[in-house]
Amino acid sequence: MTIYFDNNATTPLAAEALEAMLPYYKEFYANPSSIHSAGRKARDAINLAREQVASLVHAHSSQIIFTSGGTEANNLAIAGSVSGMELDDIGVSPIEHPSVRDVVRSLKSRCSVTELKVSQQGVVSEESINKFIDGKHNFLLSVMLANNETGAVQPVANFADKVRAVGGIIHSDVVQALGKLDVNFETLGVHLMTLSGHKIYGPKGVGAVVYDKAIDLRPILLGGGQEKKLRSGTENVAAIVGFGVAAELAKKRLNESYKHLLELREKFETQLKDIPGIVLFAEDADRLPNTTFFSLKGIDGETLLMQLDMQGIEVASGSACGSTNLQPSHVLSAMGIDEVTAMGAVRVSFGLQNTAREVDVLIDFLKQLTSIKSSH
Ligand code: PLP
Image 1 (spheres, rainbow, N blue to C red):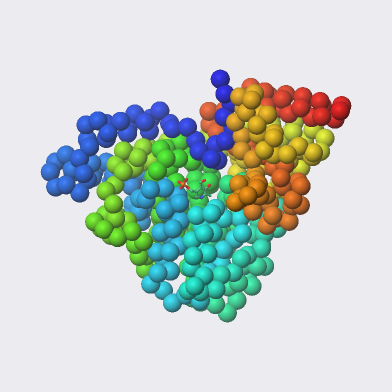
Image 2 (cartoon, rainbow, N blue to C red):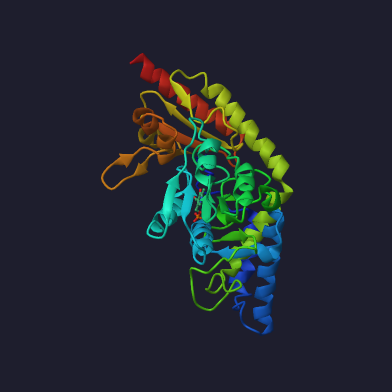
């Protein structure tokens, strides 16, 4: 049996979600745009899922546009919201997912792009936001609610107040916060939010944009005009149904899952800190309850990942494949972490299925490994 500690990459599919999805592959396969009763049944299922997803984020169902995932939702939210607007600048945090960073980069021919600063704890600096906003009106700001690598939670509601006060637009990728924190579209105050199904025990290949109807959102995919003409393409009915059920479950068990995840993380970090040479990233930041990003001095992250894998323990490393070699995480670089330490980075992200016993197995192995290393 393997131990899966890579839940920020993806979560296992909840049994309830799978169960709800299967009939939409087997029996209710009609196209939701068809007028006949089978088509209407598929349409009703999408509408129910829309209510379930909206309820999880305290939004109205008419504000939800289903997409093929978080990546497409980030593309639609950013490219689609600036498409019709007079645009001077886009402000973006340096710790965003590539599906935000690369879309923003692609808009460089239309406007200037400002990269904000983050603290050593991985939190976007308020000062750099103030500086960016100063004197501007025609701009978009994109800051994620929680970072996928460090888990650091960003003061997005505060930034949204500032942006709205001067008439700008603000987007937040809440993919990692969803299901772990109570994400509230109303109180967060952003104009656009990105969601993804497979980080909340729903299926892969489905996500959503939540949007404030006051903004002029335009489609990036043209065609049959599904999803209020904002996302053409026959809907992935089964995946949308699974996302809806996962959202309902997430809402129901939010408090219980927060408590469980935090217990696992605290148990892990308490023992991790006893290991000599440990560096815990974003330790002092407000963090997601399930995420620990760390480095062990003298041990390369990729090597540690492979050693853990051989023990049946699945984690993520912080480095990414560049064109010719491994690159340190862009998140750690933005935090000013030196390259050697950053190349040692490993991320453990707990999920609802994990147990305290599994944490013990990981800790025992790390302790064993570091004691072997230090005796050499
Ligand atoms: N945004 C964040 C913060 C993510 O962690 C991810 C997935 O890793 C995405 C966006 C992309 O979502 P998807 O895999 O549904 O395209």
